[in-house]
Every structure is written in C-alpha cells, then in structure tokens.
Length: 263
Image (cartoon, rainbow, N blue to C red; front, side):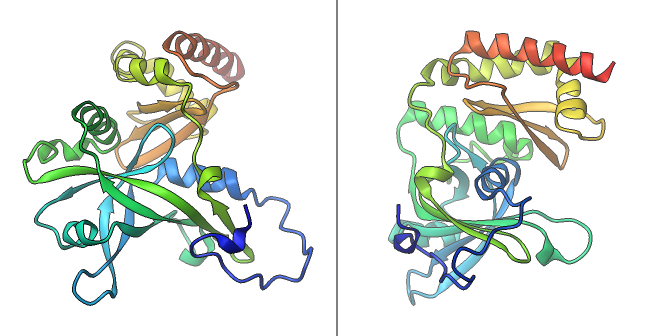
C-alpha cells in the first residue's frame, strides 16, 4: 500500500534511502503500544463546529488488535461519534526524562458502536479483563462498547524515529482463530486462578518485568497480555496459536522453558 494514500500520512522529510536507526522496529513497536497502553487521547470531530476535540479514555483491544472504548451516552465524545465516527486515538508510553523521547502511536479510523449481543458480551469481557476498575460502570445502561475500524497508524518512536503504518499491517489476522477466541475467557480464568505461579514466571522471566500481582488479561494468535495494577506487559508466542488446545500446549511449553532459563 502506498503510504502517501494513508490517512494522516506524513511528508517524506528524510533524505531518500536514508537508513532508519538499527534499533527502530516500527511494526513491532506499534503493535506493542496497541496492546499495552490502557489510556489514550481520543480525538473526535465536534458535531457542531467540526473542530477536533480531544478527550481521555480507557482502551482495550479486540483479538486482532482493533482498539475498543467503553463510553457513556452522556459524554460529548459519544455524541460526536454518533454524528461522525471518524476519530484518532493517541497511545503514548511514559517514563523518565523527556516525554518526547518515548514512543507513541496515533491510530486513525472510524469508531462504530458494537450492537450484536454476543459480540458485546465478548468485548466487554476483554475490556474488563484489561481494565478491572471498569467493573463499577461497565453494565450501566448508558455505557456501550465501540470498536475502531483501523485505517492507518502513525508511530513516533522518539527523536528521528517515525513511520506510517497501513491499518492492514497494524492489525493481525484472526480469521482462523475462532477456537482460540471461544476458549480465551476460560483459559485465562484458569491460568489466573490455578496457575498464578506460571503467570508470574511469564511476567518476570519472559517479559522481564519486576515481580507483582500479575494476571493474564487477554490472548490472541501472536501472544498474550498481562496486567499488575497499573503495569502492563506482553509476551509473544513462539508460534501462531489459533485454538484453545494449542494455547494450552504453548503455555505449558513456555513456562517450562522460562523456568529452565531462570534456573
């Protein structure tokens, strides 16, 4: 796909054929931000004036990585999206030092409210696993789940690191993962309830995180997500996973290899 045809594509200001820094991996970084950042700046178009309006919202992802938001019918951004679904979502890593030195991803597309009852139930479960504090209001009648139809992404990885990414590249193909999707909730509940020690090993050994009350919060064909309070992490599978049975096998394999590595 020609990057110049992407919504929001940036002008090519780098000299032609200028090499990117060796440690810059745009697609890998972008997908990681998409799966690990839980609060984003939501940009909508004001329904009265057309001006861009930016608000703060919690975020989760569908199995393919498409952003999900849980928003109230009483909110101005919800009214804006009802009038025009086009929007952007800024997901930014924070840390010490200059905030502009940390990577951030802007995702462009159109939000649509999820109406199908089965899909709503599944996506609410994914959202809640990612954002447990939403339990207080997730079932309020004025709240609804919206999913972003991703058109493109723009990654700024810090100084002299930037890339435009097509929406089809930013997301992963989950078309063959119906078995995994059906097994996900039960598998994660089982891991968190009965194998907390394994989940801790995934976080500390495979993700390189500090110890904490780590829990699995989601799985997809490429990997699984972890949360511990305000912290998040992501672990990639050694191979693509599309069924519940394969998820079980690969998780057993990974914890054995992680424990061997730790020893």
